[in-house]
Length: 310
Image (cartoon, helix red, strand yellow):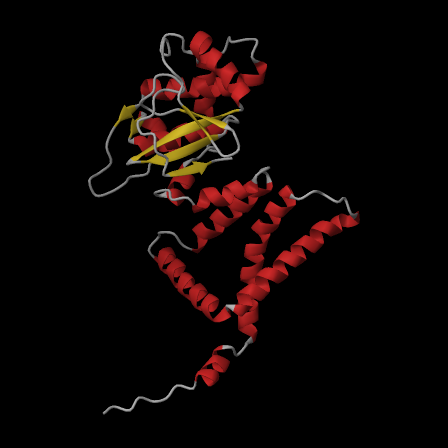
């Protein structure tokens, strides 16, 4: 008969709950990183009481930080272990040149910057939590600030629909449709290597206007964003395609007339516009490479994930 040593549970629990200065430092830093995006969401959604020196916002920040800090301290043993494992994963990613410390820093800074300039910052969090293949690589490849990408978009706006007048409120959308016309009129679909996905940057795709669906989506999103449009990428069954934010249903009526009667009358004759309406009632129109006009038929209806680029 084997006698196992008895475990003194109260003593073990007390050992696990021993606090050290490093515990508090790690939990404090982690609490700060979590508090900032939560505070931005509350700041954008709560009524501004207009207190002197924005004291209402200061109190909100302190309150959120305190709640997060004490919650994490209560679970500190598990949290510290998870942080240690995550740091090891990031270190490994940095060594092999994959997703590491630099990438997570850029992603976090980008998220905070985008949230601070968005009336619905919580949507940014939701978008990042949705499943999306190769998300970090795709975001990096959407080089909307690259001069080559912007110059291409400007060229497209000068080449197509430049003489359209009387629709000043929809000038940006018309110019984005010019980008769509230029890209889709030249795009040549080419498969990725058999070994796996090849994510081409927007500037790379400008060389030959060739690639698969994610390469097309990256270029379309980058060019549209470079001239002030709001694109998003949709992940569906084995496919990724771009959409553009149209606005409200009233805006959709105006854009429908523009597409059917002014911009793409031949391509859209007798056909329907295909779009999605998000949880806020905003209309997003299909710009897939398979379409000959904005709002062309979807290849697949089901949405598995969305990546919005504000």
